[in-house]
Amino acid sequence: MRRSDRPPSTLVPVGGELMDGFGRVHRDLRISVTDRCNFRCRYCMPAEGLEWLPRDGLLSFEEISRVASLVVERFGIRSIRLTGGEPTVRAKLPDLVRLLSPLPVDLALTTNGATLRLLAAELAEAGLGRINVSLDSLRRDRFEELTLRDGLARVLDGIEAALAAGLSPVKVNVVVMRGVNDDELVDFARFGRELGVTVRFIEFMPLDADEAWSEAAVVSQEEILATIGAVYPLEPPARSNAPATRFRYMDGGGEIGVVASVTQSFCDSCDRIRLTADGQFRNCLFATKEFDLRGLLRSGASDDEVADLVERAVAAKWAGHGIGRVDFIRPARSMSQIGG
Image 1 (cartoon, rainbow, N blue to C red):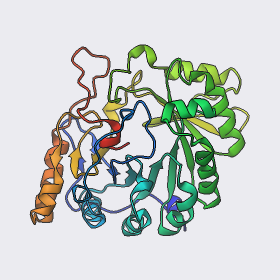
Image 2 (cartoon, helix red, strand yellow):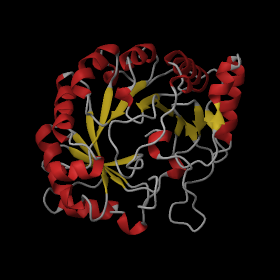
Image 3 (cartoon, helix red, strand yellow):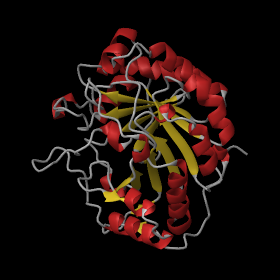
Image 4 (spheres, one colour):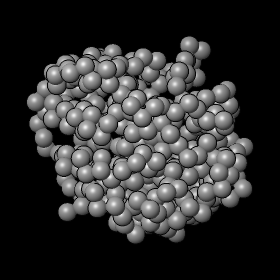
């Protein structure tokens, strides 16, 4: 049985559920394995790049596995997603997947797809279930402008490789930016229908390393649905599957997802926690405070001490990100340093 076909975990958490002060139970762990990336996407990091973490600054695979195993056993985490930077630039990534795949979780990966042709089969064999590929343009010149790399052909080939390896489902994540790629909405819809992959359109969020974001640059869920629906009619969503709301094509040609994190915030049902590549625990993508798990792990702390830090961090989670409010504060670190 493939991991993606397994029923949800029935593991009973031995330490109780991870609940914050607003009653939200956390079951989704995002783990960044590196801050490095082979692209320079303009909303993710500065064009000149960043100063990369030294090797000993990264959590080892064994340290990552220890934290993951602990939160699954103690708190009933059901989903783990590996991110970056670009996770496939971390050497021997399939070895980490092999350490995590025995856990009773939905194990997934988010990648830019540029080197996926080389790794897809081995990742699938190691136990990876699902994969998301980030792709913001189907036009070669625009892709290069957005990423500062001429890599569109390799990304498209990587998507094909993921499908051939049996990774399922394969999803394509598109950050929609007004005046940048919003004229490709129908193109992406057609691409997904023809290839048999689910395209997820993501509202542009203020996570860039400069001041490029503004509310005017956000293309709302309503606009996305109206544009695509005019060509490929869509059914109303049967249910909300936060963070992405799913909409099926009325002709049976698959579905799309929309992550409306700006115009229809799902903070009140958020169940995500995050571990950065350098071992900082974050209770929100937009958190302004981090909790040092790496220092704790390397000081010889017990599992109880590690679990206590995680519980305290989740308890301190705020009500929502506050995008659009006058008191909104951007994270001190860029998206590539936090993890997707």
